[in-house]
Amino acid sequence: MAGYFEEMGWSELRDGEQPNHLLHMARFLLDVGVYDEDFSGQWPRLPPPASKNAIANLQEFIMENDVKNCPICLKDFNIGEKALEMPCHHLFHAACILTWLERTNSCPFCRHELPTDDEAYEAFKKEKKRAEQRKEDIEILHNSMFS
Figure 1 (cartoon, helix red, strand yellow):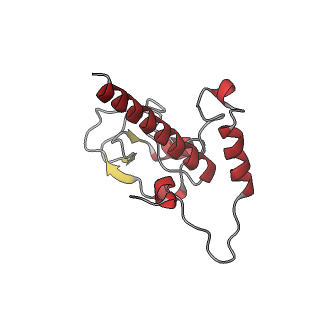
Figure 2 (tube, helix red, strand yellow; figure 1 turned 90 degrees about the vertical axis):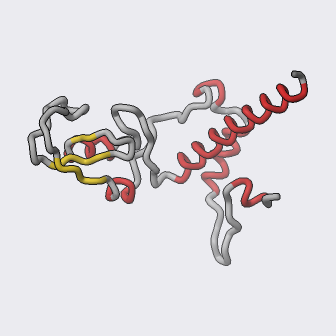
């Protein structure tokens, strides 16, 4: 059985390390339902930019044919032109996708999300995923009891 810290995905504070009090206050406000009515479980603003590491790890791709176009600017790729490939396998001009990822963390075509450097947003995503898992677990339990 996993311990409390493993279950929550947390780690204990090291010597001299201080807790992030703003993150605790934000979590408290979410827990007491301050944002539930206004945002219906959604992040209250645009997702933050993609992490610098995720952007640096995008794969470069040399276009071998000019059949595809960039979903952002809608211009065709030229043969031999460099494009950046997202983890979802969509291709973009480097200037187009880098400008996009400086504003938000998702693919503009399919909304596949890259990791961010924003701890609060990453905690929100984890909590949302845990809430969905709890809902599924309750549904499975209910169905096993009453079917």
